Amino acid sequence: MNAVIRPSVSVVIPALNEERNLPLIAEGMPPEIDEIIVVTGDSQDDTTAAGRRLWPNATHLRQSRRGKGNALACGFAAASGDVIVTLDADGSADPAEIPRLVEALVAGADFAKGSRFAHGGRGTDITWLRAAGNKVLNGVVNVLFRADYTDVCYGFSAFWRHCLDVIDMPDIAVSVPQWGDGFEIETLINVRLAARGAKIVEVPSRDAGRISEYGTATAISDGLRVLSTVLREFRRARSASRASATGTTGHPQAGPG
Image (cartoon, rainbow, N blue to C red; front, side, top):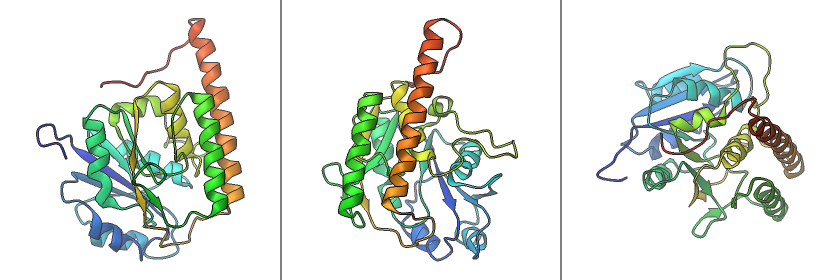
């Protein structure tokens, strides 16, 4: 990490049925991480106990509703770091790459996005169908939101905490399900930051492949979910832009905090 400017870093780990994977995540976690937040739900194994054993000084939370998006929202609400990192507990992303995400932020980015398709990146479990679908979805997102993503479906990322105002995560205090509670959260974060003009930098990432199969779905259903999210968020962004143009509302912009 940058030797002169070292922001504090919080890593949020949503974990459901990941008891056997957490030790590998802990083994690869960089020592310079300031805060680890493990958010668990209704796991059918001992994920919660494993997390507490591996990170006794971490913050351990139980999510307020179901879904990955809600788990991240709970973790973001508890995070105190200047930088917030999202790290899946399934072993697909290497926590040792976190310092490179942080370096991209220190160098001027608002949002550092891991990419398996950027030069130097690698995906070990990407079938031809997933690769083709990812290319199509990247194209749709890039056209609609004037972005330049190469791996919009990958959830390994880092951002400055002021970006939380732009992302506008679902309210964790209400009991009924909210838009953004599920796996659509990763796409939602990507497109909302792009829509608000955030400076986005992709960082090559080497996907280790899922250790756990929990939460996986078919390429087709995954792709349809992402596409639905993209279109819904595009309509949302367009409505917000029109409202802002008429002076009826305003939205926070990404940029130096």
